Length: 399
Image (cartoon, rainbow, N blue to C red; front, side, top):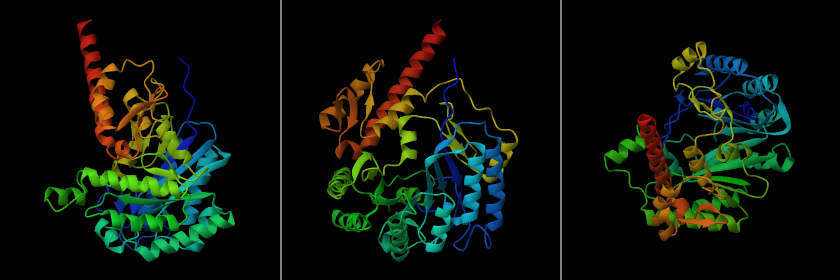
């Protein structure tokens, strides 16, 4: 079997942040509110980590020029512009960058000013993902965020100016909905400000309470009061309608974009295509098989000394992964040619409730009900796939 085409996308993980947010379970290293990339608190840790990251990039197999790069975290905007530029130079030396490549950097308000933004863009970044999360200072404090409304508004102003000037190709604003105590009127006020920002792309995530987080402990104590399903659907319905009226089309469960501003990099994940991933805790799937790096700096450094070989035995992501990521997209998934009758039977209750529909041969979550309650549909994919694997195991044992 010929090898699959090497990927044209890279994710770089920068684990450092000022503090861990109360909902965060990512592989991050909090350095304190005064940390910076080039000097001062935390700078030595950042430099040592970047040397490891450069080492991993240099040791990667060769591949074709990259069409998308995404620098995420953590808080990548803690790095100074020259450090970001050096990472992009390393990728260009290793793989090359296609003309017009989408190069995205996650930035947090209160970690940069207009001059630093200009310098980052001069190094080749052309898309910014701004981690706003909320325009409400009380909510930001509730989330454990460091920035406040004034920081977010200043960051939006700088991004809009750079976009108007042509220095920035596109930018996105992140918000979180279904927060503790959230009501429809309060969310409407958030949407007012999001629309007023004129961001050409919005990522609006449902709060997910992950094990080991502050929110998880609060839930276990019974003090985290999250919206009921009916309110969650109403919030999502309001989001979809108001953003559609503002010219932002929903193309994935959490993502809305004006024409031409959908994230090309994220579409790589959702399409099931392969990608390179570098850095502590990063996941890669260059040959269709996922490889996850260790989540601590010491373990990552040791892993670099003896990394496992990237597997090329399997072409394409496993079927369950393809269905899980495919269902998140507006266009849904095609089950034609699959022995998925058992899965369709599992889905029938959701069809009857109006959460799932079949359209032009593809299965799609309805908007907003199905997308608001998508986890219940996706769980059935996982349970079905576990049954398939168990049946296959029994078949092999009986041979």
